[in-house]
Image (cartoon, rainbow, N blue to C red):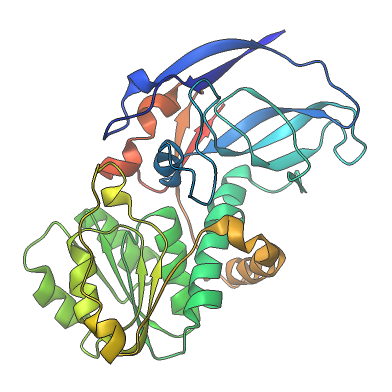
Length: 329
């Protein structure tokens, strides 16, 4: 039996273009002892994928090599198994790839088949772990503080804002459309959402954060970064989760001067989820409580069919997605 997969055929130069991928037919592997085969049902499209395409070896994950199946996170069902820990019929979640079938690995989690796979990928897996670890474990928020979240309508940013609200913070977010800002304020309970494409960002930020900014959860880079930095309070924390506006640039934009880090005693920390997998259980339990208390809501943007990923991934970079971006296979 063969199955469809999408491989990296060449590295991108700037934007992700369809010609860097190739759709291929692969032979279903004959399983060896300890192996299992997963039929993927949903896979996640994430901004980090752009960094996986760069040929740098000093990042937190090795780059996807030319000729390899494109990496992703996904959910699927075990359809063949020679591993007692992963019986046929089990639902699993983990690192997969742009493929209809995936050879399972021991790092995959067996998850309750009754759980909605869209909720799993939107709240309880990498997305939720990123939001929880970044805000709670690294940011150490205190009730009454002000947090600014860039890319707040994205899958991670929207969770960060809701968790912060549940913890008693004043929550301000930036997003790329009036509709997204309305969603953040009216549906998710943000105190203020600012369309970063509208006029005079500085004045809007001053009005939204009259007492300055204690935490800045950075997902995007771009003009908001300097404006946020200038408004940080003493002992503020800047949590660098992503820089999506700059992933396609050949040369990064120069960052803020370090003077305020020194004089204000700021803490700036970058983080990536694979370094914090030991906190997954704690994060899952905490997220489940927020959900049960009605403090977390999410929405998904679902594309149909494996090959929809080729063009669909750019929705992350042009702001076209309305919620967590998933592919249903």
